[in-house]
Structures are given as C-alpha cells and as structure tokens.
Length: 117
Length: 114
Image (cartoon, rainbow over all chains, first blue to last red; front, side, top):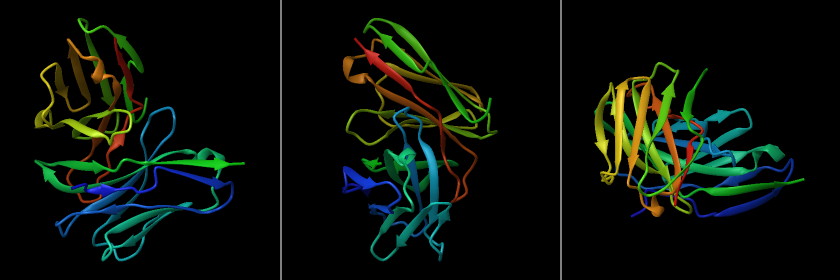
C-alpha cells in the first residue's frame, strides 16, 4: 500500500491566487514527520515546510502553510499569493522510523504546479 | 560553497563504461543518502550512510557501488549499467535523529545510459 498519496498529477493556477496541494499518508506510527519539497526543472529538491505528528499548530513558513488534519491523515500544502516562480513539482514526504540514526523518507509521486500569468 | 553539491550535473555513459558520481555536503551533517528519481516514479532511496557506516541498501543492484570515505563525501560508483538506470540521482544529507531533522538535497546528476 502506498504510504504517501498525492492525487493531483497536475494543477494550473492563476498568479496571485492561493493553491492547495493535497497529500494523504498512511502510517501506524504515533510519532512521524511530514515534509513538503519543491523541485524546479533544474532538479534540486528544495525543503519547504515540516509538520510533526505531535505539533498542535499547523506549520507556517512565509507563504507556505500546512493544513494538518491528523484524524484524516492529511497534510495539504497551501501556497498563498502564488507567483510565477512557484511553478514546479511538489512532493509530500513522510518520515517514519529510524535507520540507526538516519531518517527514512517516503515520497509521494508529486504534483506539477503551473502558475499562469 | 554551501549546502550539498553534486558532480557532474550531467553524465552520458555507455553500458560498458565505469563512472563515479560525487556528492559533498558542507553542512556538518552526519548522515548522507543516495536517491534515484526515474520518470513518473516517486523518489527511491538507494543507500544510507550514517557516520560513514552504510545502514541501508535498498535492494540496489550490485552495478551501483557506494562509498563514503568521511561524513562530508559520498560517491556512487557505476559500472555496466543498463538503459533503465537512466535517471536523476540525488544526494541528500541530514544532521541527526531528531523528529524534525530535515534532509537537504543536492542539485542531482542527470544520467543517461546508452
């Protein structure tokens, strides 16, 4: 079974609008972390935001916020006031368990976001 | 330089060639990772090193051989690859074991096997 599900292969949004990218996850761990990464066409994976399973408040980082609904096992990324530079692939990832001190991240298949002028 | 760097950025090789990918992190982290990103597939974890010790080999074929001489450098040695090995190879590093530890990625090496 997939651990991370991103149901939107592609999204098109007008510049300056807000956009929500969906992510649902599956885990039996009580302690886990959720991450969002951005991957422009250049290839580099850029860390955007993190949410811990025990965090009571939704994470925010500038224009990025994470709508964390634990009971529904969803961790949607919200980008406010979208910009042309936001066009990229976006990946949701979950950290569960430890490999002798190192993390193991499981990634979703990604959503390609295109911002139209 | 800062962050995670990878060289080369692009590589074209024949199936009989031997080449190496290099990754260097300037973040003082203890763990380093190799990922493979193929078209239309999620990132696949290949190898994990923690304090220079390999802690994960995710069923990777032996034609991929990792090397971690110290906590700052990671190599992926390639030999007798197949065309299906063409992909973006990403290196990442993380500090430690805290719940909030983030993996930071390099720009990747785009590999084409002919």
